[in-house]
Every structure is written in structure tokens, then in C-alpha cells.
Image 1 (tube, rainbow, N blue to C red):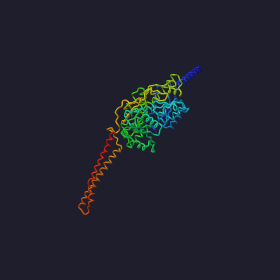
Image 2 (cartoon, rainbow, N blue to C red):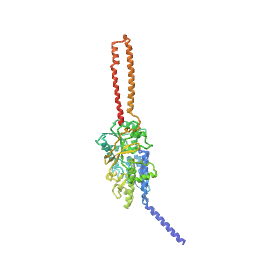
Image 3 (tube, rainbow, N blue to C red):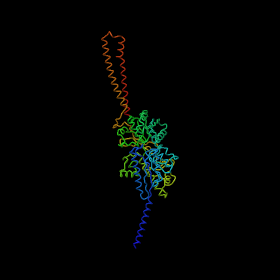
Image 4 (cartoon, one colour):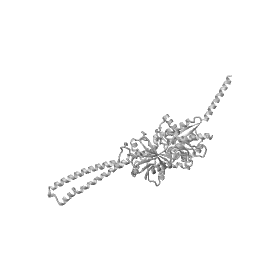
Amino acid sequence: MARNWSSVAALIVAFLCMCARDGKAQSTNYSLGFLAPSPDSVIPASLSIEWNSAFKVALEVMNSERTKSYQFIESRHNTECDWQIGQQAAETLLRPATVPPVIGAVGPACSDAAMSAGRVFYEQQYPLLSFSATSEVLSNRANFPTFFRTVFSDRYQAAAIVATVKQLNIKRLTVLTTQQYYSMNLGSEIVAAVGTLATVNTYLLHHSADNSTIDATELGAALDTVGKDEFVIMAVQPIQAYDIWRAALKLDKIRWPFWYLGTDGTTAFDPIDTNLTDPTLVNALQGEIGVSPHGSDIYNNPACEKFYTYWKAQNYPGFPSEGKNRTRSYVPHLIDAVQTYFFIVDNLIKAKINVTKESVFQALNGSGPAAVNFKGCTGMVSFDPSTGSRSVVAEVPNYDLVSLTPSYWEVKGDIKNGTLLNLQLLKPPGSYSDSAYTGPNPNAKTKAWIIAGTLIGAFALLVLVGGIVFWRRRKRNHPAVRSESMRRIMDFVGGSSFRGSDSFRGADSFRGADDFRSTT
């Protein structure tokens, strides 16, 4: 009898083990790569932290909704927004030994790293989905057929800038670029889009020897040519935009020209980031404008709210500023990139198709089933097979015209499909009555020297005149040493010639510097 019971127990244990194995088999894991920006790159540390947390939040929230079917396991590698490191990170991520198998990746954030990583993903036939790499070159399907993105390309960003230039009737532009492929490519897109609307000057800035990302001497020379009614457009990486503003402050060029139209400056510059941002610089920049990708604000989109709520509850670092119109850093586009992979796998499972890198790629480019078209944090998310970029049919290109306040970038206009709508009043930098900017002012210095020089000259003139008058009277008391010629010379020197001193009153014309300063 005991033997029979032991046999029954063995059968029960075996059955339970089989059920457990079957249960595990039903829950499948996949690796989702993240080619992340690291803090020691052209991405500010605060932004890097924000993006890394956003990926973690999106993955955990989406995983929590699919505990009985599948899970994504993250495989994170830093790219530092560098071409070579981006390639190395991609090669490491796609090693055949990776367990569970990789079905695709999110990133990189920067176009240069996305180009090198994109080539590796193409060679190994893996899909790559970026949330902020915008270079138009990445739309070339011959070179990057497996690359996709949840943002619009630089062609539409340039169109948004042109819409602003046209609406504000700007006739002269200065475009600053650096020795990075992304920067030079964006600069050329802007110049081509502006066409004959305005006169455009382009300057290429190099790295300096003091570890800055730009050469301040070159920047100063470029800004010396800029008039007060011109725009300066920074077609540069985020940290370089910050370095340009910081150098311009030291050069006292921050209030010339009338505006800085920084495309990546809005991403890099957080006025309340005390670890990076100088309050004096914030004061000097009040009123500066920029073009920002339109994203979802924290609480105005039900499709996005759950991610921010979870983020705040978990107390992960880098939580975006709360309040209307403050999410300006591609976080919604990153969340939508993660969501894209989940919805593709959901569709593949429903269609009873094996989840592989090939089936995921076919869903992204529309050549197979399980294609996505969903309402995300940034609107309808879908992809154009001919470019891999976000579909302009599913969602019209949308950007915000923003202006800097002491706390955040405030929306001043809505740019849809290349047209600026609902433009609000813009106040130029330096026109704020509560501005505390007390930096150097070359006009003030010039005026001070003029005033001092005038006073010194007037005093010297009075001493000279007094001396001559005294000497003349003394000479008149000694007629023996006077001559007619001497008398005429003394009459000339002591008389009408000094009436020319009235010309010094022309120094009043320099008071116009006050007027210039007050308007810029």
C-alpha cells in the first residue's frame, strides 16, 4: 500500500513540474535594447538622467500590463552620442549570445551615433527605433533600411523655423554650425528651406583648446557681424547650444541680436536646473525663443498620464517639470518608441506569428502583418515605409514656438505643417523691467570713457585757457618784448580757435547707446 501511495505522489509531483514548465513556456521574454545617452556627452547630464528614467518607466509600465503573456528585458548600452562608441554599443548589443534574444532597440538619441549604429543594425538585419535622432540623412532607405523614428526629420524642423522667420518678417539670419555631421546637415536644411525669404550667413565653429565644445573667439567674430534685428539660429547639439549662450554672455553678445532661435537650445536649457544653469544667464536670456518638438504635457493626455504617475510614485530621478507646456525634451517620443515594440508584439501574438527580429521589422516598414497605428503620448504613431520616419499622414508635423521664462519654456505659438498659428506677444531679451542682468556692456563702457574723456579734456582746456590769458596779460605789461606778429598769434590762440570746442558737444550723440540697449 505504501508503495502505491509513493507511486501516486511521484505522479502528482511529475504532473506539477510539467505544469510549471508549461507555465514558464507560456511566458516568453524578449530583450529590448536601449542605446542610451550618457552624461559625459553632448547631452546635458540632467537630460541624460531624464531619458534613462523615461525608458525604465515605459518598460515597467508596459510590462505590468502583460505579465501573463510576455515580458521585455532591457539591454542598455551607452553611446555618448559619439560615432565610434555608437557603433561599438550596437555591436555589443547584437552579439548572438544575448539571452533572451534581441528583437530590436530604442535609440540612439543623437544623429551621429544613430548613423553608425544604424549601419550595424542594417548589416545584422535588426530594427532600430530612435526618439530624437532627426538628421535627414537617416531617411535614406538605401543606407538605413532598418532605421525608424518617432520624431519628424530635420526637413520639418527646418520648415518650422522658416514659418517663424516668415511670420516675424526676419530678413537676415546667421546660422551657427559645428564640426558634427548632424549640425552641418541641419544647417544646410535650414538654409535650403529659407531660400530667398532672407539673407543667410553660415558660420562653422570649431572646438576650443580649453575643453569647451565651441571656440569663443570664432563665436565672437561671427556675432560681431550680426545686427540687432537679425536672428541667430543654433543648428548644434544641445550642450553646444548651452556653451554658445554661456560664451555669448562673457562676450556681452547675449542681447545681440534681437533673438536667438535655438532649435536644440530648448532641449538643453532648463532654467531651473541649478546643477547646470547660471541664474545670471537665465536673466540675460529671458525672452529668447526657440522651436521645440510638440510633445504631450504631463496631465493633458490620458494615453501618457499613466507613465508620469508611475514615474512620480517610484521617485525615479529626472522627473519632468509639472505644469502646462513644460515637457520639451523628447520624453514623450521616447515613451512612444517603447510602446511601439509592445504593440507590435501584441499584434504578432494575436496573429499567431512568431515574434522575431524579422517579423518586428516587417511590422515597422509595413511589408508584413502587425503594423502599428496607435494613439501615443505624441499623437498618432505610425511610420512612413519610404523614409522610416514618423508618418506625416497619420500625424501632421507639429512644433511649438517657445519663449524662455525664469522657470520654463513658455509656448507662444503652434507650428503645424509649416504654418505658425496663434502667435502670442513676444518680448525681446533685455526688455523685461524686472531683469537682474548686470553683465558687461560695451556701450556703457564706451559712454563712460567718453564722459570721462570729455571732463578731463574740458578741465585741461580750462587750465590752458586760464594759463594763456594770465600769460598774455603779463606780456602786455612788458611791451618791450611784444611784437605785432606775437600779438596776432596770441589773439588767434586765445580767441576764436577755441570756439571749436563746441564740437565736443557731439559726444551727446553717444547717448543713443542707451536707446539701443533699451531696445535689445
